[in-house]
Length: 252
Ligand code: PEP
Image 1 (cartoon, rainbow, N blue to C red):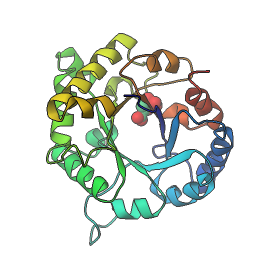
Image 2 (image 1 turned 180 degrees about the vertical axis):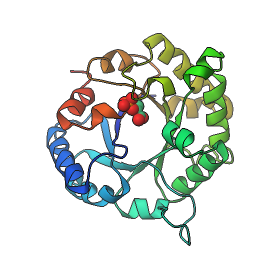
Image 3 (image 1 turned 180 degrees about the horizontal axis):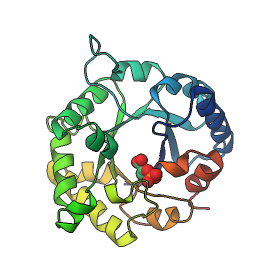
C-alpha cells in the first residue's frame, strides 16, 4: 500500500498571531505546486483560525499542538477537540515529549485525548520516543511500545484509520542531533510490527509513521528514503517558510 508522505511543522510556543499569519502566507505560496506530499503546520491555539484562513486555498493543512479531552465545561485554560476542529484544524499532535516531560502527561491521559480527537473527526498524531537515559538502559523499543499500546487503548482499528504515529527520540528533539538512519529504521520497523500485532497487517500497512528530531533540509532525504518512514515532524526547521519548503521538497 502506498502511504502519502506527511511533512508536519510543530511551531510550539513561537510566533504571535501576525507572525504566524505572515509565515503561513509565505508557506502557502511556496506550496502551491506541492501535490505528492501532505503538508501540515501546527501553530499555537490563538493562531489556528487566522492561519487556517490564509491557507484555505493552498495545500497546507492545519493542526493543533494539544487538546483537552472533555467536550466543554469548567476547565479553565483548556481547549477541546471540537473547538480546534471548528477553528479550521484537521490534525492534532498528542503526547509530544514536551507535554509528557513538562506537564506530566501519562499514557492514560494521552489515550483520553486520542479518543476525544477521533470523536470530533480530528486526525491524531501520537508522539512516542525514548529519552537518552532510557536508550542507555536498552529501553529503546520498550518505551515507545508502551506509549503506543497504552495510548491507543480502547480504540478499534476502524476508529484509527486516520492515526499517524511520530517516533521522536527525546534526545534528538531540538538538539541538532538527529537519530541515525539505522536507529530510525529499527524503531520504525518495530512500531509497524507492533501495529500489526495490535490491529492487523492491513492496518500496519496503511498507518503513517513520521520521524521527528532535528530534521533539517540536509538530512531529510536520507530519512525519507527509509521504507518505514512516511514523513517528518519538524520543530525548529519549520519556523521559517524558506527552510521548511526545502524539507517539504525532500525528493527534488
Ligand atoms: C519536535 O518538536 O517535535 C521536534 C522534532 O523538534 P526539532 O525538529 O526542533 O528537533
